[in-house]
Image (cartoon, rainbow, N blue to C red):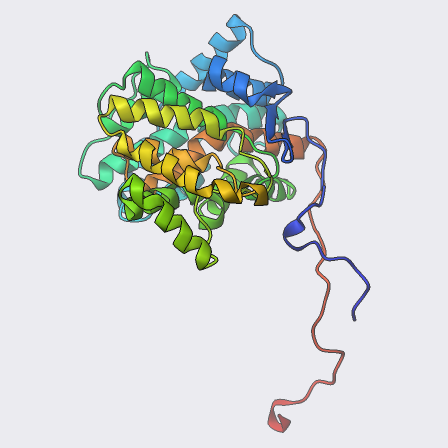
Length: 377
């Protein structure tokens, strides 16, 4: 049976809920978290402060930030059994290992099965710290090394780089990682956040929703752009080849990775902060050519900006990770580190006014027909 129903494929343009967290103006290219411009947060705030803002609704005072940061630092540990699980699946993709480890944590963490708001906040705060440790531990274990112990004196971003690489990052490198996390912290009802909300809609626990979000982020159509940009940069090789590359892509009607966004019609407002970071880190690491290739691609893409093909945040992220010597298969897990507070608050909002998310599909199959026994078919 068919009906005269408008189908919004991919739920494009459909508002399914209200949210007080992030406001995205795609036409103007603007983004705010809790009313604060992403530009102010990227230049003046810290990831720890932004986590508090997103989860609790207001910027913390000094005492509140110190207490919250203390909880994050105290959570810089993993049950020994998690290291055993990571070792057992060490040859898997880092996103699969991360998802498996988070799922396993649900069986080991205190109060992980509790679904009250306070439990969500406590479990979420721990997970913000544990996710980067899982990623760093896997990177060590799969390369035959003992995982690096956390440094309790370092910030969240600096400690992540320390545990991943085994060397203390410069202040500039730590700050750039911090900004990267801030820029990826929250972005409305994207695919992984919506998936997490669907999971919470069934009244399950937070760990289950984060596993859902991680599974959704792992898909290349959602979380894979930074890795694809780095592949493109390697393929181009030199700045002077960028124009030819773009011309060939456009002639073949193929997308140029890192340009265009489902929401933004102008340049992604987060991109400018990563652009300057790539330039500075490239100079610090003695590899300015990566930035030069990126900018050559931007120049070659200018004629297509009027069609909404502007730079998005992931255009620059991959090169930052490359400069740190981070393997490409860790790019999406790094995205997850930054997105953790966004997923947590999306889950909290869903829980506060919970309703089972159950959209409809319009049937367009065969008309009613008689069953035919197998001998007569």
